[in-house]
Length: 80
Image 1 (cartoon, rainbow, N blue to C red):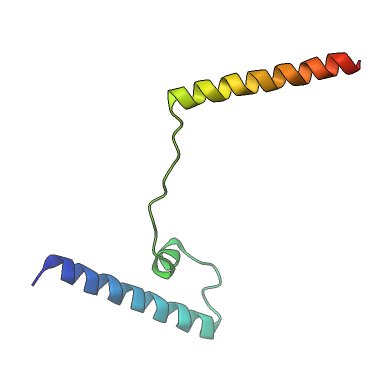
Image 2: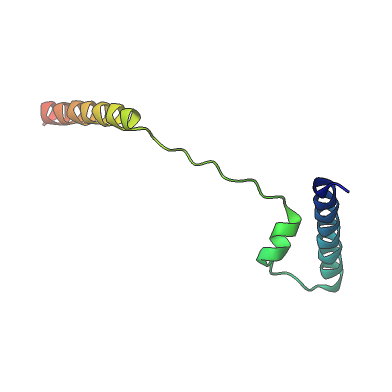
């Protein structure tokens, strides 16, 4: 038997059991506090993608912000 198929079946059974536990807890009034394991069984987790700014993008943003701040300072000095 293929290991991928076995893993898929086990995961689906784990999810089914997790949902059954949640249903029973909801009926009995228990389980108002979600534990980490219950949350994991409730929703499939996706790996988070983190945005990493490149050095070039950081440099560009820095130049843009410096220009913006200089313009604001110029307007402030002009108004005063």
